[in-house]
Image (cartoon, rainbow, N blue to C red; front, side):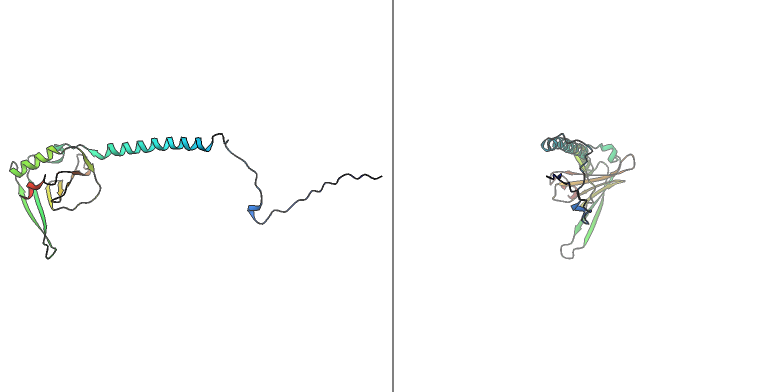
Amino acid sequence: MLVLAKPKLVARLLASDFPSENPRTQTRNFPYTNTLGFMQKETMKHLIWTITLVFSLALTSCQTDLDLNDIIDQNSSFTLTIRTVDKETGLSSNQTEEIEVNSKKWNRLVDFAKNNMDDWQSSPASYIGDIYVTQNDFRLIHTKGTTGVVIAFTDKEGEPRQYTKKIEKSELDFLTE
C-alpha cells in the first residue's frame, strides 16, 4: 500500500491595485490603557478648568476703575458740542459752547466724573452721539435719552483708551439745559 503525505500548497498572491484591499500591520506607538470613558472625564476636567480661567480673566480685565486726575484737567474748561438733526431735511447741525471752570455745568460734570470712576468697561467700538464734551485728549460721548456713556482719552503712556458705562437716562441731561 502506498501512503502519500498531505501536500501543503502555498500560494503567493500579488498585491491588489486597490490599497484598501492590502492589509497593513498594526503598530501602536503608545499603549491603550485608559478606557474611552476615563479619557473623556479627564478631558472634561481640563476643559472646565480652562473655561473657568478664561472667564475669570475676562471678567477681571473688562472692568476698570479710573483716576479723575489722569483723565481731565480740573483747571481747564470743557467744550460742549450738541448735534441735532433736522427731521425734515435729515441734515445735522452742531451747537458749540464753552463750559467755563467753576460754572454750574462744569461743577456738575466734574461731580458726574467723580461719582462714576468705577465699573467702566473697555470698548474698541466707535460711537456716535448727540452730546460731546471735549478737553485736550479727553472726549465724553452720550446720546440723549439712553443709558450709555463713552469716554475716550490718551493715558499717561500715550496709549488711547476708550471705556463705556451704563448710567441713569437723565444723569447727563443737565448738559442740554
